[in-house]
Each structure stands twice: as structure tokens, then as C-alpha cells.
Length: 113
Image 1 (tube, rainbow, N blue to C red):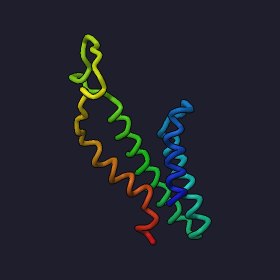
Image 2 (cartoon, rainbow, N blue to C red; image 1 turned 30 degrees about the horizontal axis):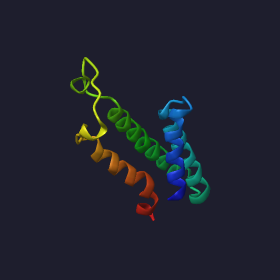
Image 3 (cartoon, rainbow, N blue to C red; image 1 turned 45 degrees about the vertical axis):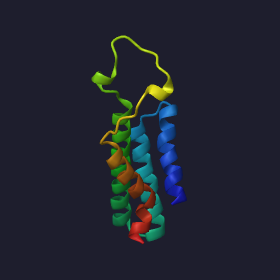
Image 4 (spheres, rainbow, N blue to C red; image 1 turned 90 degrees about the horizontal axis):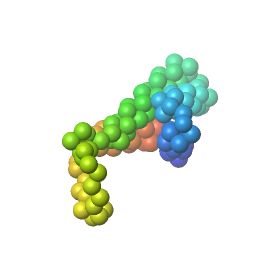
């Protein structure tokens, strides 16, 4: 589980290093595939788990980028400056798949065990 958290931090750190986060998600899948190949001994299982983890992490990156984009209705034409307490946070549906994906990425190995 700690390794999964460290690999997920690698995906977050990719954006600061100006690396495409989808490449970091693919790298996470490759690392997980190598780990499964070493410990499980099955190439087929390793490839399948690498693809699954790369897909889960890519979906996680996709929903994170959707959260970062502001709706056109949220962008005022003339910027207004308000105190931080006056701004309310709206619920966005992207939070639900993000939580599910995060649980699957971090705790996915425990589900298999």
C-alpha cells in the first residue's frame, strides 16, 4: 500500500516537472507490471495488472484535470476580489469517481490478496 501511495505521488509530481501526467500514469502501470512479474512469476498476470493500474491512474488524472478546469459560468468577465470566506465550494460530480479510483489504486492489492 505504501508503494502505491509513493507511485501515486510520482504521478502528482510529474505535473510539476512539466511531464505529461498520462506518461506518469503509464509509468505507474509499467512499474506495477514489473513488480507483479517478479513476485507472481506470471507474465500474463503482470501485463494484465499493469494495464489495469495504468488505466485506473489515467482515469484518475483525467478526472483531476476536469476538476482543475473552471466552468465558463464560473469565470466572471470582470475579475472581482472577495474575501476567501465569501467563496463557496460547489459539489462536482467528479469527486465521486476520484474517491473510488483513489481507493482502487491504493488498496487494489488488498482486494486481490
